[in-house]
Image (cartoon, rainbow, N blue to C red):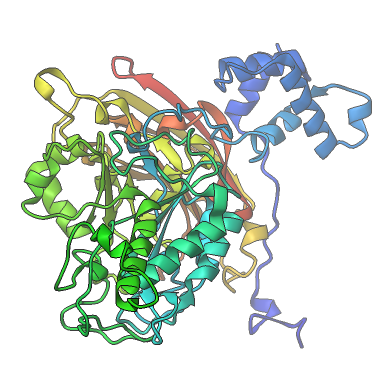
Length: 602
């Protein structure tokens, strides 16, 4: 019966589609003919010339080309590799269509990594410990490990006391999320921090702890990370250190606590249990205006040093005060990047001239308002200081906002929910595929420098076209291996088409589509598109493949997002990813990228 039925339908109603391998596109044949000088085989020296002139490999050597020839022959011709050292046109096509041998992006860190941290976009997660939604999902070290292995460099942890007030938990406060112990998260960070990149990992804390537990956190951090922990010599940094200086280091960023003396018999603090309740005064996901531990009735900036003299067996109260103060100081000394408290008008805060650099955090709504009202002030602030943007509290399902508006204003830490998926997260993945996926991408110079009369870049300004990108989608392959369970409609031939476009500033945004190819698992389109770009330094190339499915909604068949500013010119194999950003095993596209200056028409 199983052989008679396929997906519950009689076999007589099914239609078998032969998966035929498509030959080289016409452009590939022409390239081969040109560089093989009309011959039937391309030598390593001829391949080297092609790599330099078409593929933009300025630093490649003839020895590199020889290695490529050997790899291609070994992969597709086990015997021929002993008898010849040249490529046929089919071999040449196989090489171009191999994602590991001919990717569209480089695999080496190429940007200057010696500038201050504020000069980089940093791969940033929000509520990094959540497995799913923001209200009722589990907290775990698993998503933290996954994020670090993907290259995320900023991990956020919300710190709360347990019900006994003797240990620290990580959870989304006043929700139904189940907690995870802080020490478990710290150990996961230590084990995985540099698995994908040697550049620093920044831990941002949302701290709801009393001084005693802050002291315990300081001890846990120190014991867990040891020499990996970066502790600045001065509390007031005039300039952030560089990613190169901070290689293999862990950095703590939060609001510094205030040293204080609590009044005897007064306890203004209400600690939450493992599953706290939502308060009308502290709504879901809202970040507190300041540390909870700093809201005591009696606060002072420094504790009275004379209390040290009173600390003996006969004065346990004084001893407790000193211990609390010393613990708070130990915690404070670990904070390398201070998160500043906004005390007044945001515009005034952005223009406040301080002798030290700092970080501030804004919700996506506050940031969007700031961008509309005083965008140039935001840009100027981010030239030396760090700005973090986090999702609004209503994104309970862990959805995300569009990150490009943050980047174009110079915001370094555009925090997204990594446990979700969707187009916003695809853009995040695309941005941080740049610079070998190290998690730090150097901001364009126009976001870092002031012009005449202290002018800075205005994101609202309309700019002329600077470059034109021409993209040609030749063909695709691999879906019959990756999407065997795509659907049960084997009687309906696959009709693949590819959407190609630009995500960037509003003037550059555009999406186009290839024609649909019927009855073919290896579609050949040969469609070409041009994209005029006013700010190519911020443009991301969006690619999404779909399977036409009339009258139902077209089915997803893979996607990728690539930084235009790091695209290699020439013909390349473009790997595709699933909805969650995981690379598919086989599905890929063969595409060509060409760049033209504004005064040259393609």
